Image (cartoon, rainbow over all chains, first blue to last red; front, side, top):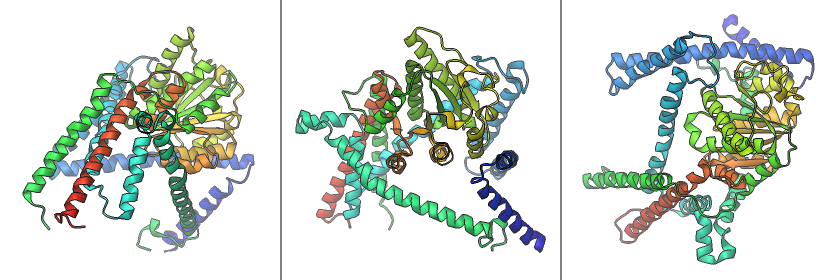
Length: 227
Length: 286
């Protein structure tokens, strides 16, 4: 079993230590090593792309075969992918691997500008509706912590939009235009900052610990087999 | 405990009413092209504006547009405003993206900013001289590290296929170390990558523009001085446009955002008023 366990562990240790060391060695050989590693990452990325595409298409083929609810949407994945691949390869008659003229809108560019961009924007904009509805249905002052969270959320949401300055002036006079924006900024600068820094340090220390565990073979779950 | 049918029906109706209210709050100001009233730009936006303002004409500024169409509404106006500011100040922006799905969007932003700036400046801006659009290269972190060693090696040609070796726009630039300022407009973890593998390592000042939801995560970096200025959501774009004395998509979005925020606050307060009333009258459990 040494070739299934020991060799991968040695490869991980050597590659990890080299990857770590070249960060601190300002030598041409170190730079060259990084270039080679970069090429290697790109090759692995290519395989990753292939696996990703295969996994996506396999999942949708399976949905269509089993006639799962919404299987027609899966069929549309193939239609969309085939159409964009065809437009890319056809390239307005120039064929693949030929750069279009600058400023010229190709069929693929048209698909990007007038299908992908609006579709992506639409999906993202639906968040506003879902968030408003979810906030209305679930945001309740059930205890002190919830009340604190609600208060902070209201101050930040209100203080972040320009209308808060007019409301501040209307309520407290012309010198108080900045009362809501400043309150919101204060919440962001102190409690938010403290919490975010704590999370950031915790995550970073955890990542370092996990990297060391992998490097020294303590954590082996990436090799499979449930170790 | 099963929810009574009448309650489910009430919730369904309420949900649709909320959807209609949100649609009206967002659509009406945008369709009517309503501008917000007077407002003060946020300190973080002002810091970034002042940093760009402090650069001498002719300085090269690297701008990375790391987002795709999903974040276009928030981040496109930031990219436009910063690019226009660079052109107005006579700086030479070098634009790139780390998003393969964002290349066309980045190109569109560059071309639109050039059109508007040519109108403002009354002269043509030349690709490869007054600016360069470098496009996308794969490599992620390794690309950044490669740019730190040899930028023209990492981008041997620009987006249009012109060699960068003797390009006027890149004159005097060998690596990331030669930049005074790099700005990243991002909807992802690229901000942290630019800090760790770019700014901290190669010593340039770093400004960022991020989606509103990412904004709070950036505050530790601002306090530590690792980010010299921040544009935070659509408000950040509006702040930058305000500082530039322009009325772009950021400014026009502010009225809609004000209306949507106020609506959500009112909805939450109304729901809580009902909740408290029902608790007091014993109709709702704690």
